[in-house]
Image 1 (cartoon, rainbow, N blue to C red):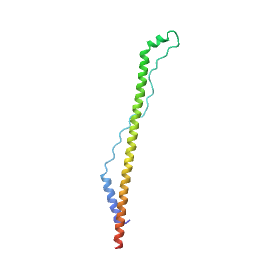
Image 2 (tube, helix red, strand yellow):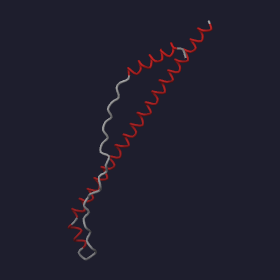
Image 3 (cartoon, rainbow, N blue to C red):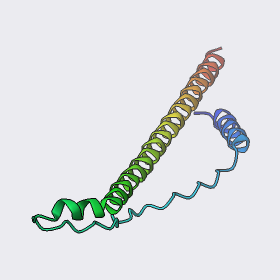
Image 4 (spheres, rainbow, N blue to C red):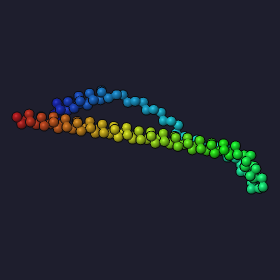
Length: 125
């Protein structure tokens, strides 16, 4: 490669680099810990003649336990979905970057080939 072609490539790559925006500060990743399941489980009465009555008396606690469990599961699903969406967005951004870099280097190769062909045609004349 001639010095002129090399200089042109350096100028082109330097100009392209100057046009690039500065890298953005990545957003912080939300809390990655999973809280333990901490819903208070009502004590079940022993099997006896009064067990049905005891269950009725604890009905509010049983419903509260079910609601607490459902809330916990819903929160885990919501958080998991957020990370799935983040994973997809990150993968898509990486794939877009690869396409951009590949297109740039394809254009660079094309330019180098044209410059080389131009230089060879001038030396033959």
